[in-house]
Amino acid sequence: MIEDDKNTPNGKGGNGKGTSGDNILTTRQGHPVTDNQNLKTIGNRGPATLENYHFIEKISHFDRERIPERVVHARGAGAHGYFESYGTVGNDPVSKYTRAKLFQEKGKRTPVFVRFSSVTHGGHSPETLRDPRGFAVKFYTEDGNWDLVGNNLKIFFIRDAIKFPDLIHAFKPDPVTNRQDGERIFDFISNTPEAMHMITFLFSPWGIPANYRQMQGSGVNTYKWVNQDGEAVLVKYHWEPLQGIKNLTQAEAEQVQSKNFNHATQDLYEAIERGNFPSWELCVQIMSDDEHPELDFDPLDDTKIWPIDKFPFLPVGKMTLNRNPENYFAEVEQAAFGTGVLVDGLAFSDDKMLQGRTFSYSDTQRYRVGPNYLQLPINSPRKHVATNQRDGQMTYHVDHGAGQNPHVNYEPSSLNGLKEAPKTGKDHEPHYNANLVRQKIERTNDFKQAGERFRSFEDWERDDLIKNLVNTLAPAQKHIQDKMVELFTKCDPEYGRRVSEGLQKAAKEKIDKGPIGSTQTHQAVKQAEATAH
Ligand code: HEM
Image 1 (tube, helix red, strand yellow):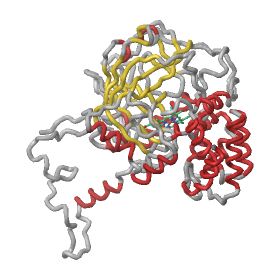
Image 2: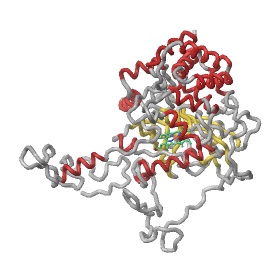
Image 3: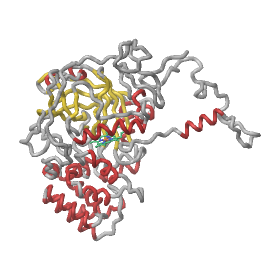
Image 4: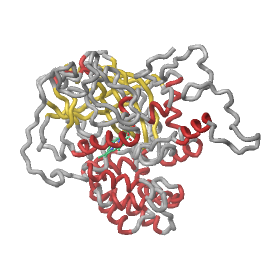
């Protein structure tokens, strides 16, 4: 039986389970394979012939098994589940702020796919490394897909997208030695003061989540919600794990890593297999859509947290992950998330990072997965798609409209082609009146929240933070250390003093350059420990 397999959600294709003869090995041309053990050779000692069609197909497909891994966030794990809306935001119906359909009714369920990841290193790197974690959610809504591409931490290192490739180059391995190097990282950071808040989080235990289930998520960038009347508010999204939050100190992470460097993938997979389904509450913070001159930071600055006392977390729904992927490559590796993927009622803010990100994701996915990546089951919406986009590598099917004249792949047309959809509400039309410039935002305020963060940590978290910073900074050149101490001091004098004292003690040791959390600099850790007590 030949079945139409396009858009099957699990990507299994048309040869469904249970059809007789299903378990007979064939080539991709459907030819039964009668010998999968022996090459066709002249005599049983070779040489081989070119007529080995089955072998050549098999090996040449194998030769192409890898696609480029993600340039960042290469290591990841994913799961399917659903999002259930509460229908309200605080004491208000959600419709007051957004007309996005997935949020409107209490109890409404939307299927989701989530991919968690670490950022810096390659596809099989240890999951114990000090690194931000990705938290990307694809909502398959009735209005098409919505991707909320977030991280575990609520802020980021930089606030302008043009700096992203430099940031990532500094954190990735040295182009000569191919090793991550704390000196390169702090060379960049010492010239990037807006990173101090993120660095303070990253080098504390918050920089190593214990696993994916006990980890928060955040959209980090500022978005907008738009209601039926075209009125907008600024929003930030946050995922709160209902399993609680758990982080690891450097020493605990090293313990885990010595036994298992896939622990987070394993933990997620096994919890779901056991029926212990992890869940997160989605909360939003809301601000009116203006510049908020009364605040000492810019609401579009992703290096800042919106203080919770002024902008409380308002729960809007709950997500549960209850199904593991059937195939890692098809679903997790080929999944493609992007910040441009919004539905009606959700919009961009002017956040410069968000604007830059929005170009980058689909651009890299056309290269990484291919121009028709949206036709893959994991990426395609769970609703009918009707476009006039045609052809390109790996075209899998034609995105016909129901009843669309197949000769008409353009619009407008009076020959039964696709038509524009009716509007569902008033457009949000922000007004701009400014010069086109290359300038920083005015309220940079790079150190205040970093200092508050340092003071808000518990003692053990602060001790671990100082240890980790000293450990990574100790092998760096003196002028980089001095610049970093100056920046830590601007955040909080005690912060600067403790790092400085740790570095002075460590200077007496001979310490090799190494990555974040490098065990070969353990002497520096010991010294810093002594400083901390
Ligand atoms: C992945 C670019 C900032 C979260 C990626 C990828 C690129 C990219 C090119 C690989 C995508 C793929 O191959 O499918 C950028 C740029 C940024 C930026 C240019 C800044 C201008 C951020 C920020 C966050 C973030 C601030 C956190 C909110 C993620 C996540 C992934 C990712 C979670 C992995 C998605 C997945 O699991 O497939 N980013 N990124 N990125 N980025 Fe960003």
